[in-house]
Image (cartoon, rainbow, N blue to C red; front, side, top):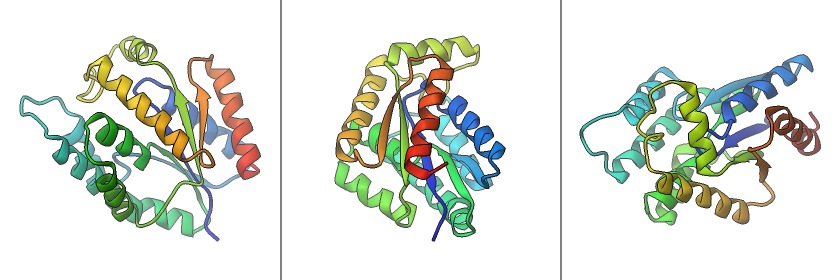
Length: 208
């Protein structure tokens, strides 16, 4: 029996990174072996692909190119990190997984959902999260947080508010499709309140 696989999803500025690190600290305090990783990335090769995907560039990146790069990074990540960790009994907390591809490249880039589902399945090797925590915030809130970081936005963060509104709608549609796996958490709440909901959810679902 493999260990639990938990993913965090949400638009830019939703607070995923903060909450995944807080959950990691909570699990460490309970002595639960786990690994924190992210997509795109998680391995040296996948991190190089991440840089290609997120760097600002003058050349137009076609949606199909973007999709295939994300899937390539995922294929490497799953086989190098996620599957070995789960098989060894180590839980995995992942910042984004294939739901992000469905929301960003499918719903927002208008690529056929059936094609994305097929590619997601191929890249993931059939691995599916046991629990997905969707931190839901309006795009305006996410953008305000990004501006507050004082760093230059990456290529995806620089997309329009309308684009990120579509991403959010895509996530909410995925929630309707997978209510047993995806749990929506109000990301506009104070960070402590968000984490309390995260902790309650993983406790109820996974016994942590």
